Length: 161
Image (cartoon, rainbow, N blue to C red; front, side):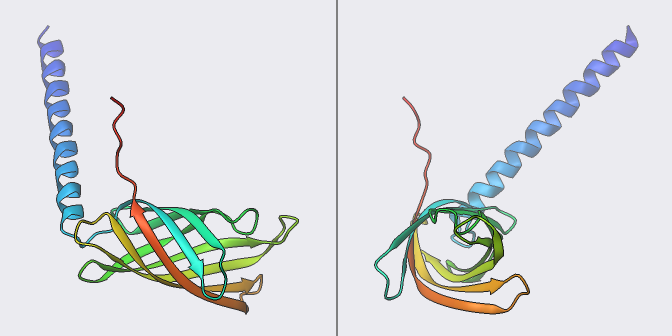
């Protein structure tokens, strides 16, 4: 009986510690995001290539630890992108994302790298900047590049009532 009581106490204590750790982590993440020096969250992006009226849309997710995942609206041309972000100034960030580049038949022909500068507003719900895209063949030789600008809106939770 004493063993069951000791085991139950240990489980309750472990559960309480886990709850405190999760609560503290959520609190730290919220305050980190609110200081304007972190980019974590998900964003709806609208990008325009210079001298091209085509609007490219994307979903961009930035983790608290500096990783980035982006899903562009470019059909079959590139994969989902993976990369990272760092803070470069007050509410200013550098983002680099790599994609697998495919031809019209879906065959791998190289990679694309997008490097961008991004600044968020004081409310931390809008941002924008410029980008440079470099296209590489399978051997890593740059075969093309283009640039443009992008605007983004943070995806906020929309509770279902």
